[in-house]
Length: 299
Ligand code: CP
Ligand code: NVA
Figure (cartoon, rainbow, N blue to C red):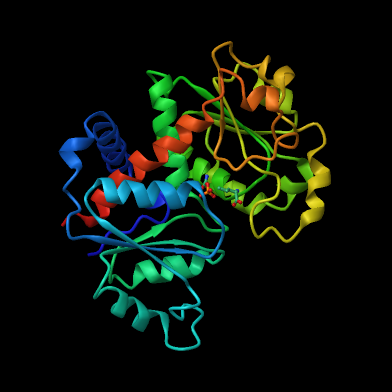
């Protein structure tokens, strides 16, 4: 069976712990791992913009001794007009050992994974962003000794990053308070029911969500490919500023996957503050993805 990395909820705690532990080892002693992907090639397809994911996979794979090839989806015919995706994947498998995809078609990523030809890694879809959240969990573990007693807070849109965070919370069961504008939450009711557990709260008052939090997390109000640009009006009062941060614990960290829209979801006074760990998050993407690559490529 080929191993994929498509969603956090495809894994159990033991498997995720293994990947996180491996990432910590790679970060501590990178030289030990510098040859492990010798003769392996990672293919990458970005149908949407990317700075962090592109750099961290590319440099991360090279640091493991492997090669990276960026492919243009249209050029290789992934729009299903020239030949079918299974035939393309079979040909790709003659040259690359693993394929990372970022697109607006989660179903396609799942279907490619189900082909069981080469490992498929989800580099962000409209549905989820698992590499981001696992890297963020590594960052959280570097700041706090015990994640079980933490209260994490999400303030912002109901989007792909939040879905992956919900998957993670369902496995690790840390306390998670979520403040999403009511109008947006209403449209998500069927999705929310799946995630219910005692340590997960959807709150309408964002002050309650921020209170005594150890970690305040947010993301852009309009994700890439978002069609409903009008929804931005629902975020009045949702900008994370010093006032909101002051409700949290004194040593609370601020997290954002980036790119950020300063002045919208976060004020500069917060993203530039000493409690902000956004650059550490960006850097940790590399270690977690190196671990993911080793995990899916190992026989
Ligand atoms: N956080 C993140 O995935 O950044 P990019 O969109 O720049 O890859
Ligand atoms: N929710 C954002 C994440 C970017 C890394 C988006 O999809 O645009």
